[in-house]
Image (tube, rainbow, N blue to C red):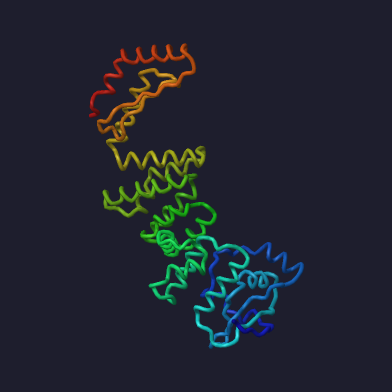
Length: 322
């Protein structure tokens, strides 16, 4: 049970840079400014007075910022009484947020970072899951824990879907500079989760093989040239960047794919007959797929296959790639 004293506090006496109890990355307050201007401050923020007599914000960061934007010099607040431990302050801030809505993954990650030092390891997962509202699952806990190690701009990017949750987790062991290089690239592309993770893997493997930092790979002339082409949309840039990285990571495979594509065109197949090579051209079986609706269609496909069998390009395709 918390005890409060309702007071009018000078905003200049509030340390707005003390983010000990801050979970959210949100800084937008336009809608809140309009609401407070029209109907006043309905829900006062909760503060705690520190030993230096400055006030620490426990709940209400955005409300206080909105009041500052309106030019207010004083604000009505609820000031906590007594010497409260930091764990209680954090729990109060979290519960205040959860009373309005569920916490997002970044708030959960930041909550894990702030609370972990105050909770014994033996039951940390269960306690944090209960307080922060995520499944009591070690795998989920591990991924959330990794998010809070990333630069704040990347954390914000998870929320606005510039980078996916899983791709962001993949960046957690990189230096902030390298992680931000990936994030800057993803801002200019439109990639699914799997394709973002593919890019991360390819770049890291290239960096290891060529003894470079991942950021140096991402700053290559080839990638910069692709990203600087205004006639390409985000999808087209994504295709070209991924193709370049695959070619650089697997030069022989890229050469094989180019060769196969050329020879397959020489077979003059139509949209109803498809020839697929073995994975990575490693000696497995080729696959032919054909579609038809009637016996007439089937006969036509058979003619296509017969012509294909007589085409010298097929023999070249079936020879070991060199």
